[in-house]
Image 1 (cartoon, rainbow, N blue to C red):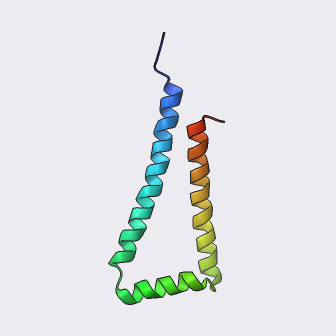
Image 2 (spheres, one colour; image 1 turned 45 degrees about the vertical axis):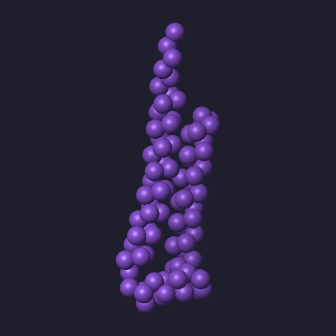
Image 3 (cartoon, rainbow, N blue to C red; image 1 turned 135 degrees about the vertical axis):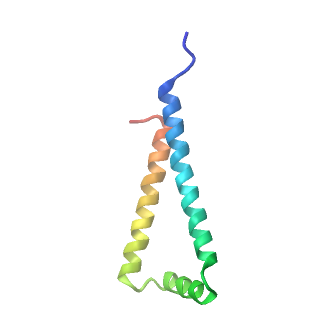
Length: 82
């Protein structure tokens, strides 16, 4: 009777790593944004709200898609599906 399941533990560790990466990225983005001068903060916020630039659109879509993939992988690892 072996109560230790290494497959479940490895999935749990990977899920914790993925969720840790998401949290670390969010905290890093907030800290970086708050360290900027007020003018730069307002400029970034204005550009993100406008989304007129194709480069900003591409960057936002890329960031969203990477975070979505990371979230899907975390859910799949937690469920144990292959």
